[in-house]
Image 1 (spheres, rainbow, N blue to C red):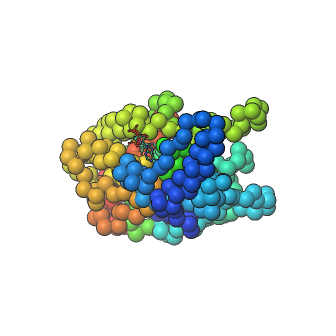
Image 2: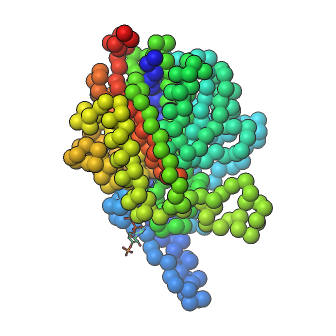
Image 3: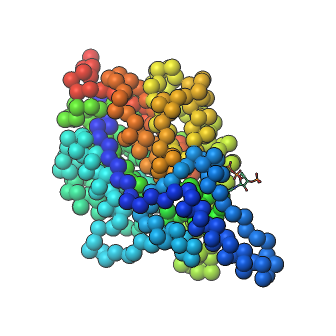
Length: 377
Ligand code: COA
């Protein structure tokens, strides 16, 4: 049975924030805070710099669902109003936009989809699952559920979609990843205030025998790995109200030991991709493209070098960091969405995401043009 990705979609929020704008807001807040600290004798806070952000991460700007609140030194958080239960939730709205593009690309309608997997780092409520809301909004059949493996959510979701199709549970599944990362980012933390942006991606995974798509990316294999670490952690959860004194502590937002993550996760990712390639019989020299998780440009260069045995060109390991920053689980999928058109029939690439958990998900794909795919013996 041949199963593949036949459509992808991307929702990009309407507002963009440059490093200079973000740093100006942060430094204004630092000036105000330090004026207070001067009175009490507390150690002053250090300022942020746009030059540091670009050189340390490769990030130039990011999209956000709201920019006014983030750039207001008195707020420094997105302002996203509660909605009534009768309205689509904001994550549902983002998912619908991305899903429509993916469905159009795959040439399928909502009624052709048997499962919706909403896979992302933060769901805005516990239940009903946002995925079920998306199912209702789009009119897809079957079932839907939410899942969360942080930055690896989309590749883990593709793995599950693939297995559902292979098991005959559904012919076709939609994986959507509405990431509002600015909602969990501490814009007052110098070490991490620049890291994230918002986006939503969508992926159609289907039985290629039943596909109407002109172009497909046959899934040659998927591989997942997790290993516990506290180095990327967000303690926000449903029990916060049970200890109100600590409800607004900074650990209820994204906290990261970035350098440790860089050192520990990079070899884990390179090893997983290398052993995964070997297991499906693809030599590293045969990879045309690596669509890697978008957290840090230098990290991706290191991983690509380790896998390929040489430096990857910007075309072989494309980056969307400058424009999108880290969009958690969307990163590798945005890169796949934007940088695959020119590849030829038979070209092989790796989609790989990694992050909190730690978690790593690898999906090896081969381009197929309709009518050219080999028939099963
Ligand atoms: N502006 C200016 N200087 C800053 C700064 C800022 N916003 N933030 C930190 N610095 C300074 C530090 O104080 C430190 O100064 P020192 O050398 O005088 O002590 C120096 O810059 C280096 O800080 P460090 O935190 O070690 O930076 P880094 O080079 O490791 O870069 C990250 C930070 C987050 C960009 C990087 O570690 C990273 O991307 N890690 C991987 C993250 C990842 O993959 N996560 C998984 C998915 S979420």
